[in-house]
Length: 135
Image (cartoon, rainbow, N blue to C red):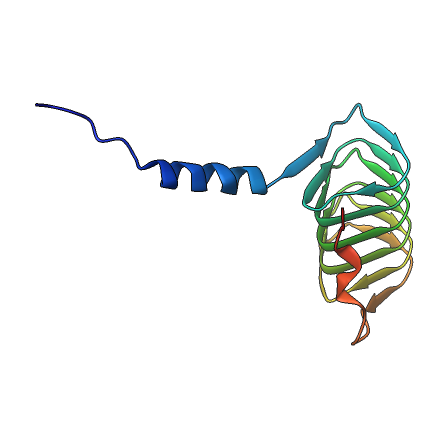
């Protein structure tokens, strides 16, 4: 007489697939990576990386150190970077310390950020597939 109608299985499985498809990886403050890092999704680094970082979106914590090139669609940097940065959209927070050249399409810099390098807009025709990860 009284019964609950459950959500159709197709809706539930679509939501599960969407959740499984959206990935976000975090390297904690106690993590140290030696070697290149490639992620086909978003990456949050609070620890240290000695190697190049390639991902879709990068968020760097204040205490983080990246020693290598960064290539991403978007990046929000708050820690120290020693290497070249190539991104479409870049936000440099006031706690960031960058030692290297920066290539960007859109740029936001908070007052107090330190950069020892050159800023240059990415040239038209730059290969936009550089951040695509295959495999």
